[in-house]
Every structure is written in structure tokens, then in C-alpha cells.
Length: 127
Image 1: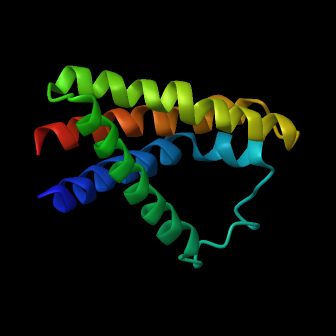
Image 2: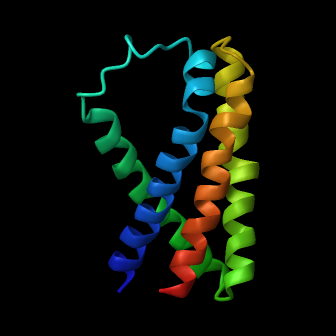
């Protein structure tokens, strides 16, 4: 059931993101120039879009793992970690630098895809 495993992997990564940004939320908001007053917590769009994007990433991660013949949990975790660290995070760094935003956002936002994709890969391999 590829669809079920992709959705489960997306849920795992999305929950990790909620925990991660919950832990670094104040630092992240300060680095992003946001405050409690400027964030519209009643707007569901960022949460919906982020979950849809997480499903897309989980689907592609599944495709990469299957295409590479990776079936072992450890190799899958390493592959997901590498995709996050060496593909997603450099794009984040590029966006942060060109938008002249606080450089600490590189590590704050880079941890999410790095750990999130490793989690996705583990879930995809286990299910």
C-alpha cells in the first residue's frame, strides 16, 4: 500500500516539524522578524499547504528509495538524511542569503527537512 506508507511518512515528518518549530519557535520568529501579533494563527492555509508539500516530498522520497533499491532501515534513514542535508538545506541557504534574512534561519529551517526526510525514509521502509 504505497499511498498509505507515503501518507504515514508525511504525517511522521509533519509531526516532527510541529515539535521542532514548537521547540525553536521563539528563536525562529525572532530570526524571521515575526511576532505573536504578526502571525495569524487562525489562518489554516500554511498548515494545509505544508502538509500537502510534505506528502509530495514523501512521495518523491519513496520514489528515490524504490529506484535505488534501498530496503534496509539504516540505509533508508541515511538516504533521507542526505537528501535533506545535501539537497533541501542548500536551497534553503540560497533563499535565506538572497532574501537577506537572518542567517540563523539556515540551520533552523535546515534541520526540519534533514531530520524529517530521514523519518520519512524510515517509515517508508518499515511500512
